[in-house]
Image (cartoon, rainbow, N blue to C red; front, side):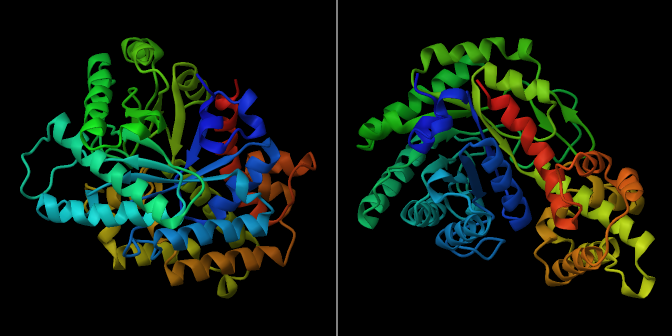
Length: 427
């Protein structure tokens, strides 16, 4: 089987030594810049994906349409010096998810427009996810209905690429994971891997739907199937990958020529678990909250340093600003964080689902974060404070591997996470 990297990135030079590829699912500019700097160092391509609620034809929660997101990512690449040809842009969970409250046909018409916008903007990896029930659907959709809707969206994408005159045809990912994307809202003890039979059946039913909708010629570009390998995280703990529990599932790839598995919610997995996932055929590893969680850790550590070095009336008060804004606008967390006031306060900051990430673009929070960096940029952070609050970065500074500058320190905390994915993806 051709390298998954070469199939995604037009035979990037790293294809020969990469067994898999990680996907950064974030729209935070500091995270994306950190990812690009790490990929430059590693000499690898970089897969960046936006989700259907982040970016859509109306703007999503980021305010960006697909073409805007392309421009946004490329502008960061220009700043970093990351080659555009080594960027791979993907769309995650593209389908009727945002419009489930509508009748199915109304929701699918909006999904058609969503796919059209992504494909015509030049996204070359498209996850077709039509697994969710709409207002007039039964509670659980049959595989045939899910596959038929996905094939319909594939046809829309192909037409959009042709109309736009794009030279690169997209590759497709089908299937979905359970629980829902973004981390579980309830406490978990164990997550059952997808059965071998279910994985094979999903692929077979989709292939039949591709034939029925006249897009069978694109089937060789269906490169991956999203399955549940038995990994997940809730607010306070992580369910780690156990290879023995996925033995039956991974054997399904023997009957799915040309395909690999895509694993979602791999955030917070151990380095050993990530390597085992790639070895077992989960060749596309998605990470989202894990990188923004690391960014929040670094920014709050810098805020703690600020309290030691900067006069009280000049501080950014980043932590307090974030807490106040989250309390004033609880829409992104209140349905997910339960318990009493004290428990909710802890979760707002420290939950693995990291719903703080929805707030970083808020003008007040962004201003406070910029003020924090500005305050610390005017002085040299003493090494002993780095040791206290950012110990890994302390040693990198001591070794001359990292500049003692606030943004570089924060981004290196993100790059720590990404480095574990690079190591896992090496052949």
